[in-house]
Length: 108
Image 1 (cartoon, one colour):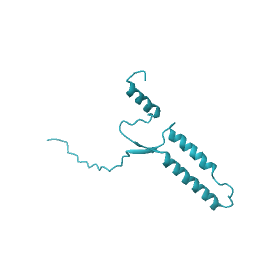
Image 2 (cartoon, one colour):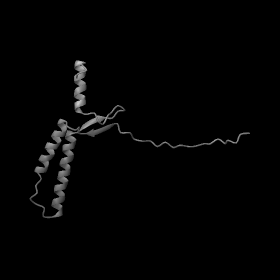
Image 3 (cartoon, rainbow, N blue to C red):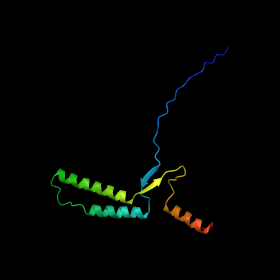
Image 4 (cartoon, rainbow, N blue to C red):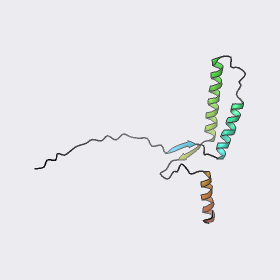
């Protein structure tokens, strides 16, 4: 006779959403430069002549938030996330790999 009793365990598996794309502005890219330039212009264009009450202030803040969102969407890039995605990969890496593909030289 055995002293062992079989164990039955139920493991519930919850469906999980795995993000496959992200929206970003790549550091040191032309899009980042445009985003910063346009954001500075949007801030410069804020009409600060009338802050007589909280409604005027709230309107300015909402307009600024709308401008930031519009400028972000205009300059963002959609990136596919894969198992090979690397957070350190940047525009310079992409340029260098393209240069290498053209020349096949280890110096590139």
